[in-house]
Every structure is written in C-alpha cells, then in structure tokens.
Length: 627
Image 1 (cartoon, one colour):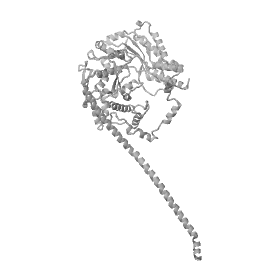
Image 2: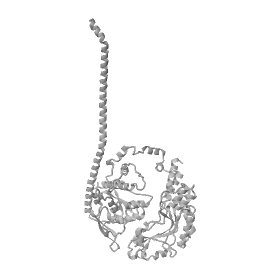
Image 3: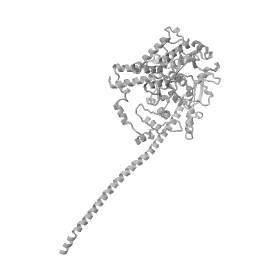
Image 4: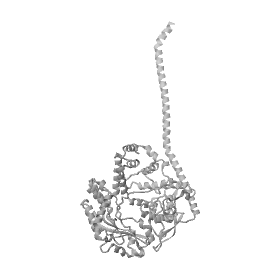
C-alpha cells in the first residue's frame, strides 16, 4: 500500500475514534417545563410538554404514566417512545482515565458535565423495546482503550460495540418481549453490572462519587392528534447515546482503502496538509505581520473592508479587523481563525454576518420586483402529483442568481449547545440595544428600536391570550425584520399581545440541524409566511422604498471608502514624492559633483601650467637678453 494511502487511513481512523467517543450530556428538564409539569390542570396550556419522571419501586412505569391525571387531562396523547436513562458520571472522570492511561497525566479542562451510563426505550406498557439498549459509548470506549490498548483499530469499532450491547441484552432480557417489564430492580441490576465490568476496574480509586445511580423516564405529551402528527417523529431521541452518526461511513471508507484503494482526488484531499511538499509551500508562504508592514497595509485598505457593520458602539480591534478583511479577500473556500475563549471570535463572526447581509441585499436590490429574484422549478423523483413529494406543494423555488447563496452562512460544531447558543444570541433584542447604548450610535439604535418602527407586519399565529389559553389569530406588530416570528421561534405560543417589547429583534439566525429544530422553524416561521396575505401593491411599494434607501446608503458607504482609501494614499504619495525628490537630488548632486570634479581638474591643470611656465621662465628671459 502506498505511503499516502496509509496516511489517509491513519487520519480517517483518528477522526472515527474522536467521533466514536463523543456522547451528549445527560438531559435536564428546563425550568419552564418543570414548572408546567407540577402546575395545576388549569395552568397547563401547552400543545406539547416533555415530561421527566423518576421511576420508583412503588409504581410500575405504566402506572406512573397513567397516574399523572392532570397531564392526561390536558395532554392526553403520549409520544411513541419512552426513554429511560440510568446512572450519571462526570465526563471528565472518563477523559482523565484515558489521559492517565496514555499520557500519564490528568486533563487541564475542568468540565463538570454529566453523561448517562446506559439508556433504553420502553413502550406505554413499560415493556423493554428490543434492540434499544445503549451503553455509554464513552464509557465503553474507555474500557476498550484500557483493556486492548494495542488493538484499538480492530476492537474500537461499531460492530464490537453492538456485540457488547447484545451480550448485556441477552443477560438481562428474555426473547419474549412480553416478559421484559422494566422495574427499578432490573435497572439497578444492569447499573451494577456496568459498574462492575466497565467502571470499577479502570477508574482510579481516588475519584470520589465518580458514578451515581439515578434514573429518568422521559416522554412527551401532546394536546391532540394533530400536534402528535406534527412533532412525534421529530422529537429528540434521548436514549440514543451514540452521536457518531458517521461510524458506518468511516468503516466503509477504511475497508475500501484496505481492499482496493481509493480515488486519488479523495486521498489528496484527506492528506493535503501532510504532504511534505505542501507543508514546505505552506511554510514558505507564511507571512509574519511583525516583519511585513506592507501586508497589514494592504489588508486594511478601506476599499477591502466590509460595507456592513454589526450594530455596536465598539469597532473591531486591530487583529479582528485584519481577520475580517483577510477573510473577505481570501480566494480559497476555507478560512480559519483560531483563538482561546474570550478573544473575540464570535464578535468577528457577527461582522462577517453583517457583511453577508449587506452583499446579499445588494444583489436582491438589482431586481425590479422581489419575486423576480426567484424561478419556479419542478420536482423530478417524487411520487405525488407533478413528481412532487407533497400533495400540497407541487413546485419549489430557487434563486435565479446563484451568487446570492454565496452569502448564506451555516454555523456547525461538534458541540450542539455552542451552535444553538450563538443562533439564539444574535437575535437577542436586549443585548443588541445594550451594545449600541451611546451618543455616537443613537441613529443606529433608532433603526432597531421596536417603538420607533414605521413598518408593521401581521401574521396568523398561535399565541396565548390573557386567560393563558392558546388560540390562533391575526397579530400585527411593529417590525424590524420579522420581529414577531423571531420571538415565537424561541418562545412558542407566547402571549405576544401582552408584551410591549418582544425579546428578539429579527430572524438573523435560527437553530436548525436536528428534526425538532427544523419542525419548530417550519411551524413558527415558514407556515405564517406561507399563509401571509397582504396588499401586493403595498408590498411592492415598500420594497421599492427599501431598495431605494438601501442603494443610497450603499453608495454613500462606497464613497466614504473611496475617500478613506485616498486619504490612506497621502502618506504613500508623500513617500513616492520624497523618493522622486531624493532621486532628483541625487542627479543634481551627481551633476554638481561632476562639475566640481571638472573645476578641480582645471585648477590642477592651471597649477600645472603655471609650474611649467615657471620652469621655462629663466630660459625665456635668457633668450630675451640674447636678442
């Protein structure tokens, strides 16, 4: 096998290992949901609610579900899946054990996050659903790493993981599913077995309380069948502890590489940074801003800065602005910015978002009508009317100018919470307004002040009334940028009419990814927009006004950039002029020097001549006397 293919396999194997050992945190019920769960039936006015219960020896799971009369009265339909998570461990304890095994030291990071030791699913009767048992992949991976340190490539595989699951399942559950009723005794027996086989032999004795027995029954209740049909399939799978979605893909690629090799383009892509020649090129192209003044000068040229600016009373610091401008000038598809927490990476991202919004708007502003930006397309492979996938929507729309999509942004991370936090932070109205609380930004603040908006939008939405009852109706609010929908995306069915100011200013971002988020976005944002009805002539007039205002402001920014660009050239022009003067001075000096040399030469010649005359002077006098 070629050296490059071996390197590709090594990289993919490392990636697979990192993915495999990933595991989501032990789920915690939100304060709002907990408050609703323990409230009186009259106060429960949700369309759905995720319930967290503890299983005890006093009740079976079936009895536990049926005993919750207040929930059953208001939310009578339960989700298909009932999840049970058992045992809590600190993630750091397992990571420390791996570090001690292979690095002989503890980790530096102090992460108190807890993970479940195992999980499973039951039906509404409390019977175990065969094949649903999941052992903590991080805990199992730690055990394999400690027991088979030299066989990780063969032992730390998805196939081996499911073999372990099958062994535990066969030990504690019968082939007859009707006999597999889950009780606290069974849950504790499985917990103790896992503690014995996967924990006690490998965790250091000085790690106190590294594992704690507990259990959580998690399921969702719905108000009616319609809500069940909407959300049941999109609910989070709490008992699926394995987050390595691509494990089978990794193994397929590795097997292909071993048996028949792979496409050279794929190999080159995977190993691009490990080829010696490319590493040398990277090193040669590396530039040090401390040694290269022209580099910063070129990057920070005002013509190369974004035309958009995230609303803030602060400007980016020097290196943030360097990174922003360098990103905009980057011709490659990948651009990396690295820095420890608190160094301003999120702030930098906001500036890039502002730039993208402005440049997208510039492309949209070229159209006479907003609808002109889109073209109607047909599906090809669906089984419904016109080859579509849905009986209600037989066509779809795409942008005519694909360059507009170049300014879309997808924020991804191995940490789901980090992604959701930033997508929820960007639309935060209070934080935005606090960030522009100064005299210098008073004009900017007025553009986002919900009280001062001239435009209004109305949508048919679900919201609570003053009696805390959820109903659907038309609501009109002053609008910054789909302000009402941005608020409902985070606060479903909120009593918006009782709020003077909404918590979000606009849909600048949205948490997507998992099915629950996608469903929430569809029902809270897309459906109200699809069903939105307004006077098309008014909408066209509003579009023309907005387009005209935008183009005027865009031109002003361009003019200011040009002025600043010319101002930065003053020093450069001065340097050029000084160089020209210096050059002319040297020419004049050279001429003067030449003339001076000539004068000196003739002076010497004159002296020489006089000397010669003086030598001949006596002879000349003698001649004169003879005559």
